[in-house]
Image (tube, rainbow, N blue to C red; front, side):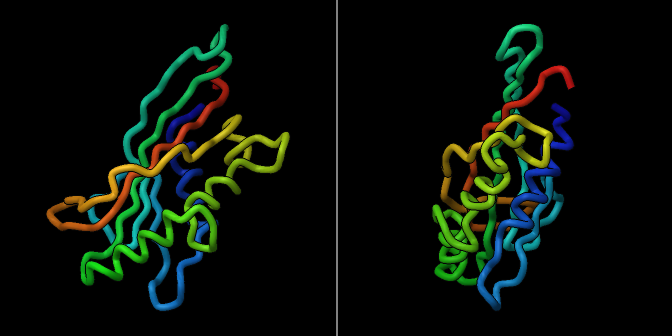
Length: 150
């Protein structure tokens, strides 16, 4: 798997799969850690690689930490926006966007870039410092498996 392509495909899948309520604006999505944040913002952060999950370089596993950050302008509204995105279903659900990125049964995930992708859990719901500003946010633990020979 090509890590940069996977990172970009995750950001594209989230961008296409999320619809926030009117008045909030669009979710900014990047496949990299941005220098500055325009909220609400989703980005792909750290990547851990487990090579050789099957013999002969057949499968590698990526464990990816993504972050979603919401505005701090109003503590309550920022957390409500974050809660919408962390819900298991609905038009603003990150879980639903990741599920759609898996493709139909028998299809490869992320438009053919991976065998599978799975949003495993949400963790670290707290205040984050990013480029000198504070945001309410959370981390998403994502597992991607795919061909280790590409």
